[in-house]
Image: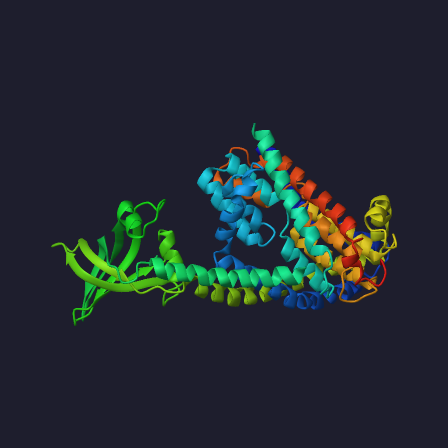
Length: 181
Length: 326
């Protein structure tokens, strides 16, 4: 099972992008689009978009970096661990749940650490990796995507993102506890 | 709301850092000015104008843990060490930070004078006859304001990292934007868009169903589901730019944008490749066991996000900034 799975992942990783390139550009050529010229025309905007997101990215990442470096995470964990334990979340996995929406590399580090300490096939290991797969780095996505459109007033995007994260984490806890029993 | 969260992250971070540093000073967490006993297994000895020993510093776990009052501390410490004695008889110790360095010392480096090593004074060093073993008492340089220094460093480092991330996007952005442009001209996106119109019209009632934004959204979601994050981000940014062309109030998010972000932050992936890869590396018997659970988790998150975006967009506090529902 694991073997088959790894093969599928490898095949997708190897073939997806070349295939998309071939189909899209090939289709364009077939439809008599001047593929090279049009490609270059479209690609020109890449630079501007990337540059436009820099201020948004700096603002967001600096705030998150300060929060992480201060040790506030440990404090937050001790404060809300008693509450999340009621939902069946082991306190060890709480930093994972808090870090997931804030930092991709941070949560990857926590997940790796938890699995090394408790074993990848333990309840904590499975839950941590499920949590990692159950959400995106919400605040990074917010900064980058809204940066690309120069959006400063995000309206209800942040509460929506937080609701989605909380639901995702609780769903991960629920489903892992369910299959564990 | 982002304003509150943003300032909270920064303010809480700084206050907690100050609090932690004050606590460390009061408790003398880093044992400033207190000598510690250790043994050195000498690997290399050189003498010239002074003397120099290189080797491994060994401290039993119990000694180390009780010295720093750590409850569940590290195992026995094996730490590379260099000790130099000048002609004047003054000895100093250098502990370069490496893989075997105890966690606490790695933490302490942030408050020390050098970035990658701890240094200190040596008292009372006794070397065995054959120059192979040494007993010594040493005292690490005074360590202060570890958290505040860490906060400063993190803020400055990440500002640079942010720029690198953005610059790294330029090439990949250009590639995908070029491909998308060709697909657009060839009418391929229209075909995709038409196929999925029943879904997209419900999710994004404000976007005309043949608008290029729909094509970019579909491509982004597809790339995300397949785990092609390299392609997903550029396509997502393209979608946001297209959505922004329909935005009646520049600088303010539209309903469609927030729904689109909800789908993205939910992070629905068919195969969570990163997590599976890490599990396999650590030696899981069944790395893929999390595929099903992740789909449930991310599925719930995505559905909750979309529903929340649809409900919250009606609240007056989020609507008053909107010119119309566009």
